[in-house]
Length: 249
Length: 225
View 1: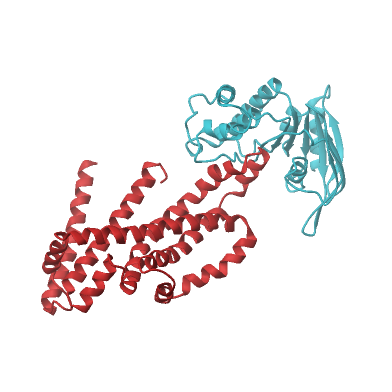
View 2: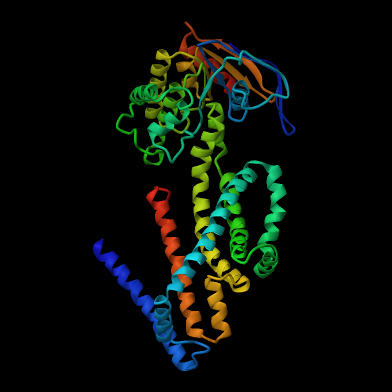
């Protein structure tokens, strides 16, 4: 067991190393920092960023925006999803609305949001709007997949509505919502950064991405990208651990 | 006593019940005996108000409190044996009383030691015993058993029948027992309604007290062939 875990870990490290080598080779072939900076210069840019206090403030603000959008979409997605899953009228009412949000280009939403909100709230709103349909759809599927035989059993035994929700629907929906939350969180990070690039709040990863484009600091662009990936991965792991610690796998 | 009086019930265009009447005597075991698909479960669901009738009257249900042993155990797979029984009692009793009742019934169905097992760790027969314990633990006065021994092998079936008799003799209630098994019907019932056809008709009512079991069996089989 121990041996296989070690083996697994070292294997992962080799795989990562392999792709870094591929990256290095590609950047050597291209030999133009502006198109593809080498892993080394990206690393240097990253170290420079990590020495700067503003970087941490920026990370904090962008994290706040991503998580706010994510939590709000979870809240609305689950509550409205429950209502639509149990009530055909509301399901029919919401279906076209969700369908539209799903297909509208992110950029259109970002631009319209810039007209409506303060710069810092634009990414929150956009992240919410992008994550909400995912949570909603999965909640509805979870509710609809709840075994009607169990619900009939609850009816026979006169179980209170609240307890049917907490003890039957909750567990039936859980695997669906869990998967949705994990993918929504990842999308949340991407969309928040995109919205920040256009709305340019004072402290935001997006603003730095934008600046690195303007000043052609491509290694910095890569370094910020590495930061976003790391944050996204970190929060995904935390979320999974959270589910696990509550025995919700 | 629960009475169904002149009931009409259609599903889509299929007429299941037409001017159908039946009554279930208090604290007796009434058996609906008939082939699969004839509408036995529909009758049970009407008696337990799970299904509404198109026409007719169901009387005697004002004070009825139901419990049900379904064809499948219908347990919450994320809860343990204990919590599954607790689930139906939570709105009825306080915690101290529940602990006693649940442990008592887990004992009666001989599942002590399995309190904390989840259903997927138990065999089908054990799950059905939990379902039986749940039905008796719940303070119902009308108990429906819808082919509860279906799919169990002979040995398990006899064990379940034995358990059911034990539980019922200690806590009597009106029972509606659905089966198409001749042996089950004559062993458990106080009276047997033989039903057939579409819409459902009662062919004969057999009252079992003092009646010879073999004779009753022959009669039941004669309707089947």
